[in-house]
Amino acid sequence: MIDFHCHLDLYPDALRLLPEVSRRNLFTLVVTTSPRAWQATSRMFAGYDNVRVALGLHPEIFEKKQSECDLLLENVRNTQFIGEVGLDGSRRFVRTLKLQERLLDDILGECVLRGGRIISLHSRGAASRVLDLIESHPACGIPVLHWFSGTSKELRRAIDLGCWFSVGPAMVQAEKGRRLLSEMPLERVLPETDGPFAARNGVPWMPWEAITITSTASALFGRASEGITRTFEDNLRNLLNHGESPTALRQMQQSAQRKLPL
Image (cartoon, rainbow, N blue to C red; front, side, top):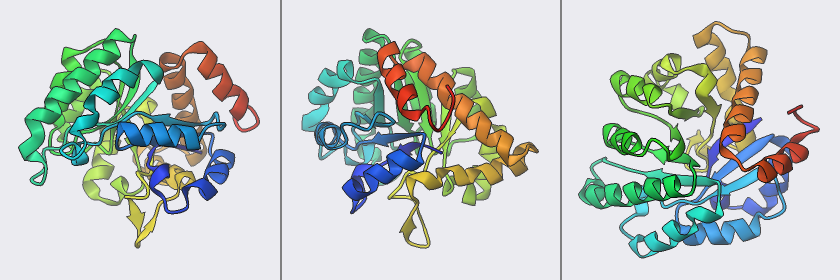
């Protein structure tokens, strides 16, 4: 099982859940909302090679955390995973959109300087602007668009730019989400939960439940669920082979060997 975008540090019982997440999941990407949260979570979650903590500054709290922008940029060199970063153009946050764009431009530029990173990106209400910035930094690494909610035209552009996508059970509950998933190249899709923010009947999705999108993908693509699961595992392997340093990749592979032959 894979969860390529969750906020495990924000679950009320995160430290109790951590060993179970590591045991049940092949790989979990814990995205953080601020650089200081990344520092603290990296310390607390150390020792679990198949649970990685990404360096982020969520656009929803950008206004409160502007003082941490330099800290984020300084630490891009210290991690292979960036997230959650991006733009939010919805009504609540549009007033800071220009400043958000400036930061994302700086982040992607720093990723270029550091040889590329795997980047989990928020793009609600601002998909075209996020894609403009990705296009202007073609060597930034591998952009993974989390819970993509743009138009079909924007999706085709994202595909042409080489973007990947993380898709969760909350996304495919809506008809639009299912349609967008059906238009994505399955070989560039990974499961996510976005928990604890994404929930079912008020209960957050657990990181090992991201794989429940398999049944939806099976119906949309006309393939057996087992084959879809294998595709997601292959996708993870391919992404990490492109985006991880050889030493870090070997550590993750050794940790997951009992679960998936890599």
